[in-house]
Image (tube, rainbow, N blue to C red; front, side, top):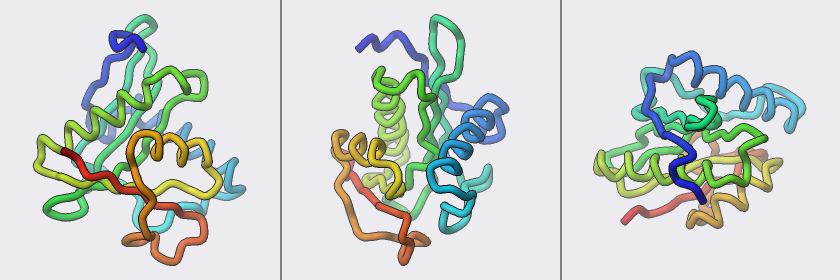
Amino acid sequence: MDQARWRIEERPWGDPVGAALRDRQRAELDARYGSDDHEPGPPPSGEDIAVFLVAVDTASGEAVGCGALRRLDRDSAEVKRMFVTPATRGSGVATRLLRALEEAAVARGWRTLRLETGTAQPDARRFYQREGYREIPLFGSYVGSTLSVCYERELG
């Protein structure tokens, strides 16, 4: 894996490039689930996102992925809007983004990361399991959801 291939940048939630990536993710999820009603609970916003990262291909300057952290409590945060463009999947950029989010969490004193993904996203489920996340019971606004699968990882 060529670590220098991507630059991970912290950007504001309202950044237009980041917003475009989130729009692409939303369209993909709408297609997978057949509707736009697939996220229980409040969507992330500029008011509740503590960290928003964008992965940029250093050769082309193209933004190829994003991910965010929303604080849950004193010791934990939730990974939100983790997305990598289809053409870049399998390249290692998703792992780079996730590790950068984990580093940002540790820097803020958060020792646990949780996340929700969906039943129609087996690729995402395999990714998180491979990266050391274990499946946990549904938490927060995901409790009772028939489309959600939740994961957690304790950070060192």
